[in-house]
Image 1 (cartoon, rainbow, N blue to C red):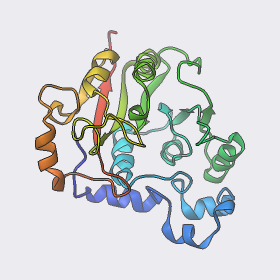
Image 2: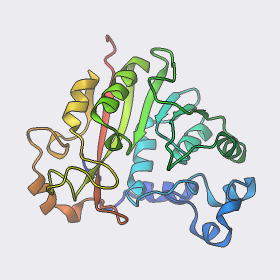
Image 3: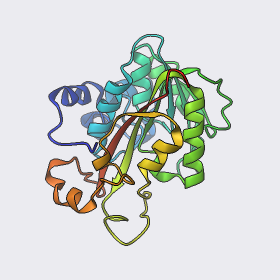
Image 4: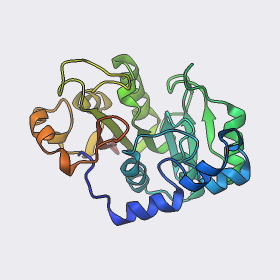
Length: 261
């Protein structure tokens, strides 16, 4: 389904508690950026102060947290987590979290900085600076796989590889929690194929490639399904969460690996 307004009250409270989606504003304004990995500053700003986000994350982060259903000992793999705060919040709730993210030339990941954030938040999130296929993770070793607005940035082959690996590393009955951007200025809403942030991927193709069961997601609101109608979506924008930094909606999907497969 597509994220809707207004935000549920418990999402608003969750964002306030953790300083999501972009850190606690007062601390961000008062302290220079170069100090933000200091332990006291990190605690003042919260775990979401270290990676820029679109405003759609006001919905995405608490929704994804709710779907993961964190508890002590739960094994969680985040794909493309970068410096995002959600991995640290899950770890604070007792989850064993691994973040697989190769970084890019324009968005490098510094292990020393990542370690400093772990120390600041009292967590032990593991960072693997590589692709999921290169990570060498054991089969059936995770209860949850999490990806927040990542797949729309990948090519078809990369996305297919991610889904193949996701199914492999999930335990039977484990779940894959996805948010996928739905850009309003590219196909099927406009004539161009992609913008500076990504492209609209076929969610139907991703679901079919995964070999997993769709347990959350309305095909009428997921790109690629026969019932998806871009004109109807465009006419219903006031009911949806729309990014304020650039025009985007958010598709939410949960897949489950079959218990017998």
